[in-house]
Length: 287
Length: 287
Image 1: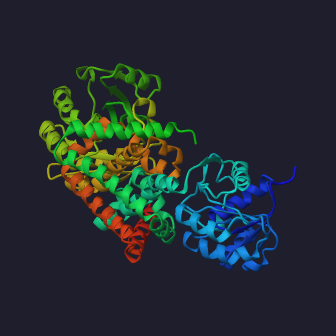
Image 2 (image 1 turned 90 degrees about the horizontal axis):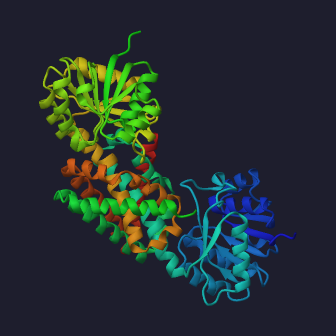
Image 3 (image 1 turned 135 degrees about the vertical axis):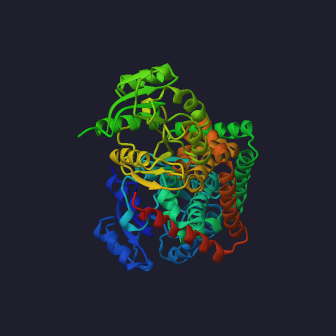
């Protein structure tokens, strides 16, 4: 059976790009992958680990490909696409893996236009580690990948990108870019805000407190080990939604704090039980 | 070598009491354990799993012991101690495992008086599961146990309780009850408040959002699976400290939210980097 894509360029061979390359090649859905990046050290690791078939730092040297996956930092996505598009033959499908979709999709649809169909995507997977060294061919197994079609999306390109993600083990979901950004503000962006905030606040209160950290503090702050510059970009790119949901979380914390401060056991119990029941339902969601 | 304690009563054979019994008997530091509890079903599980040597629901039927471990819900600790003390021979050491120390230590020192020396303790270990079914003989391996001596504490009793915790794999730390309660408000109590708050707030925003939950939301809300009634007791018993640290965390969240809402990248980067650096230092703390 022919692969879904004969030749693909993955621009940005980090945790997500490198893992996708590894998984897609071992599933046989991409024939050959050229890994593109700026950092020589990271590309060397990608080559050494066999994440990609060849590497280049030159967008003009990619050669003919039928798929481009942009897996670069959010803020550079549009500029990379602008530099890349002139080197792509018409019909090449372009997709991305960015954590925020509305502004990226609007920009990339304008850059790629109809002859290089763009499909917005966001695999909901990852760890707090980064770079080619962290790539893992099983990263997407059992995960979800959200694709964010618009009125301009080419249906054939959308279906081929969906097939790629299914082939590496993800369940594909479809959301508008705006709904995606609001959903992820709750399920990921504010979670990172909380992790960074709590790690900093505990240490600021007293650095010795970490001696008394149990598993709960370690779990809740785990994602604060993620690259802060990447997260600064994500949070600012999705600022309106993150502002709104952080306010919503603060309101809920204020309700709990108030019940604790006033000894209002009935309200406290009700809020804790609601959180407990919600967590049970989260656990019951099929991954 | 003679065991540290010939015979002990563990009152409350749940996650902590049952795990301690299992670990201490297999380490040979307690000769015989009688498990005491109210719930017949839980005691039956404890007996069936061999967590204890025998079980009783009657405090008067404990017989002579040289150690009592109170591992009951916080709010019942004092009443159980009052009912139990008349049945204990002078010299019996009494200790507890409660998550909040100042009010418990004050009350128990009054109940036990000098002839049944009381030592406050809090093993920083646990999972979101509970009951005898969840007991695990390795639960305390690599953990810390905080003992909270006061001016009234008998030094020999303190040392014997410390030796018990070391024998089951814990590192023993000493803090005053008040310092313990402030430390744990940061490292555990507010962490649980956040987990319950986030699980509830996400579901309240839209129950469908759990479909887009990645590993970060699952990690951060894990401890919201803990028994809400137990946590209501802990938070209300340590209300002043929990109120103060929750306010501190809300202030930090407001700083982050404000930087995001106003596009203040310099401040946002600084806060995220501080959280990231704090998390690295938490990871570096020897468990």
